[in-house]
Amino acid sequence: MSDHLLWEQHCCLPLSTGADVGQLARYQRPGGSFVSVNVGYAPHGAGEVLGLLESWRRRIAADERLGLAAGLDDIGAGRVAVAFDLEDSGPLEGDLGRVRQFYDLGVRTLLPTYNQRNAAGCGCLDETDDGLTAFGRALVREMNAVGMVPDGSHCSARTGLDLCEASERPVIYSHSCMRALWDHPRNITDEQARACAATGGVVGITGVGIFLGPNDASMEALLRHVDYAVDLVGPEHVGLATDYSFDADDLAADMRQNPSLFPESYTRWGPVEFMPPEGLLGVGAALRERGYPDDAVGAILGGNFRRVAARSWR
Picture 1 (spheres, helix red, strand yellow):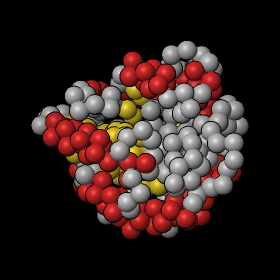
Picture 2 (cartoon, helix red, strand yellow):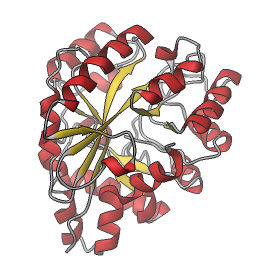
Picture 3 (cartoon, helix red, strand yellow):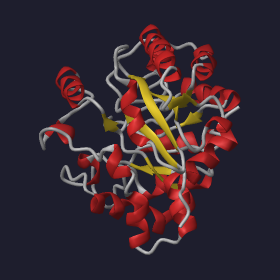
Picture 4 (tube, helix red, strand yellow):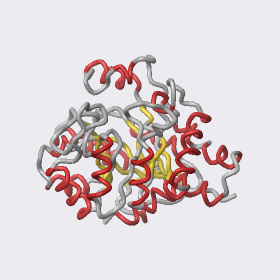
């Protein structure tokens, strides 16, 4: 069997300049690996994101196990290639010029909204779903021009569908599970998944217990969602993104401090369970045991997200 590239489309270090970036080496594998690390979300401003990027980029570049992924040529066997993502357009502070600024610093993916309405559109927890705003559509145009990938995770259903309609390049759901299997507001509908696939995009099944089931971050729970998504849109439109939190204490504090962003649908089961990097490294073998052919395993582990990057990054 081939030793495929592993593409982790979204994980979370503590959002502090002193975060231990060396933890990302846990994703190392012989076939090479890529990791996208969250560098800010709804509560953060541009200055905070820029500070994190400066600190993390410097220390990633100094770690021989890691490397900054400016382009696809930086992804291969050996080191873990690292880029960044933003989980909200709030850090742009209304300035579309910051899309290019953040792209040049390694941010390759951006969510217009995080759970709740903002200037770009609606979130998955909003009672009223008006979709993308005029600013949101202008944001998508700028992301397409720069090479940044639009991401519908945490967005409302209508906002996600509007993303797919507005974008000229692939749209992804970086870390989302299937609502038909587990009815959580953060999960996506079959219609959203099909619209994403129609753009050439990828649904990244996430290893977060509360999105997989009743706080069940097991391999079997994740594979149930992978199976469902593959049956729905085909193996060429399914990937992986654990949303693993390298500091659960920070996440718990965020959930206490921002109850509007993390309501009862997040907190009812207590501390959130995650599939760790070591679990993700075992997905390939688990897919083969389930009867997936080697080309489909390679596509799901990393080939599909790599294809989106090839069509989008500049």
